[in-house]
Structures are given as C-alpha cells and as structure tokens.
Image (tube, rainbow, N blue to C red; front, top):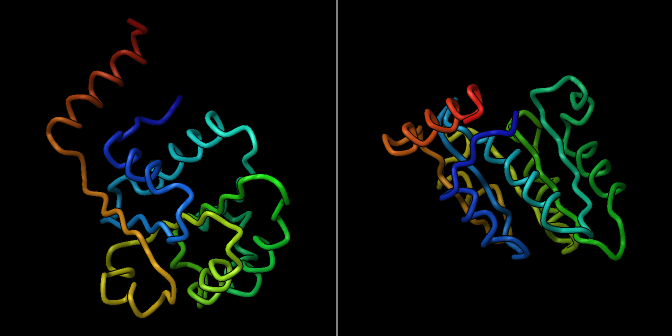
Length: 163
C-alpha cells in the first residue's frame, strides 16, 4: 500500500530539493516523520531519472552496523555516484553515535542532498544550531490536523473498497 501523503510537508521537502541545507524533519513520536521521508523517497524515484538514493533507517537491524558516525560517513560516501543526483535519507538519525560529525562532513563535501529525521526532544532548535556547522532547513511535523484526518479516512476507505 502506498503511504498516505501529507502534501503540505512533502511540498516543503520538494521545494527545498537541491539546496545545500541539511533538511531536518522533526516532530513528536508517531507524528509521521518516517512516512514523510518514505513519501519523499517515492517522489524522488518517480520524478528524477538520475537519482542515487542512499536510504538508511536506524530502526531496522540491517543498519545497526552504521550506528557510529565514521561507519555512517564511510557507507554514505562510498555510495556516491558521479554524474547523477545523490540523495541521502536517514531515518532516526539520533540513534547514530555522534551523527552530527558524519552529517557535517558529508555536507562539507557538497555532493549530497541530505534529509534526516529525528525526534523533537533530541533535535530542538537550540541543539540544531550547536550540532550542525552548515545551514539547516527544519520541517516540524505535527500529528494529523482534523482536515488531514478526514483526508486520511477517505484515502483509507478508497483503498479498502476501491471506489
């Protein structure tokens, strides 16, 4: 099933594509940060033919070996492909020890378009300024509004009943 798209947040990510900023998606637990990142990944796959996507989800055991900044940096840097648009998408970045070192160094290379998610508790505005040397663009994700809830319900019913 294709994830429900929260278009106002997705459009913010799309509009920030190609900037040198680290795009940071923050929000409370279960607010939809990971699903937003997945929706953005789907958008890039569908829209950009020359896209190389390095996707890391620290909630999955496949990526536990990258939970130290140097391993993360080396993994992402080795996945770089010349002549294409290179995207780095990291979900639950706070699970990587000293992740800010990896992200700062990857940003300094100026060859990746970087998107990360993290909890609001861990990535507050004050902490963001201290963690990252370069520029950042934060998108705060909130739980569904009433209108989004109605849209989600309609989307879910259409999918279930195919009408």
